[in-house]
Image (cartoon, rainbow, N blue to C red; front, side, top):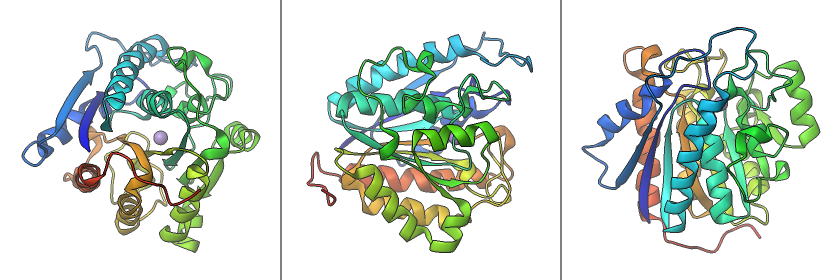
Length: 301
Ligand SMILES: [Mn+2]
């Protein structure tokens, strides 16, 4: 398929700066290799980010504005039969990409690879950082302000799988349980192995859907290996496991409709360790997407 990289340079969803620079940095590395098309979205540099601890809706208006533009363009390009690869940016940009996929493809499941479950709401968030809310917003669990521009179906919690979680706030845990989304923790990966977890994830997310949206947050990887993220969580998966997850996705590319790679923060990276891993992941996905046929019969039905 034709590919389109969407550079989503926003760090409005987190009080730590730097994720907005991730896409430009990665695209610079990719440009000798990548021959496909790209569109760049960069947050307005004149925005003064909210850092007020009591602000539960940090940069809400600016995020909605950014995501509206991103969403509109992504829907149009998916309808033109481009395979969309989004490079973030903090994870709030995935509200636009996942819902754009749902708008264009209608019945979509989602696999959310992340140390966090990103299932807070404006009521439960402790930090007010909107990058902790996107999956709730995508699943239609409150947070309607964050998807007002979306007039399609939401992605069902029953078709939602979180892979690699190890840091979930108390109230957020209740949100996830109440919604019914499936969670596989880092511990589950360590015990059962990547293969078994990903197989289950694809089964759940792919069941009676047209295919799956993948949202890959680099903070799922242990910060000793990939320190270049805004909110690192100790005890993560190894580089080998991170690549095994990606290879599983590549092998099942016929079921993948759209892909995000988010939360690379060059300002936090050490010796370009995270950048290298991000590049490996992106390169494999681009190659697989280019080989992908427009439409293939899915395995699970
Ligand atoms: Mn995330």
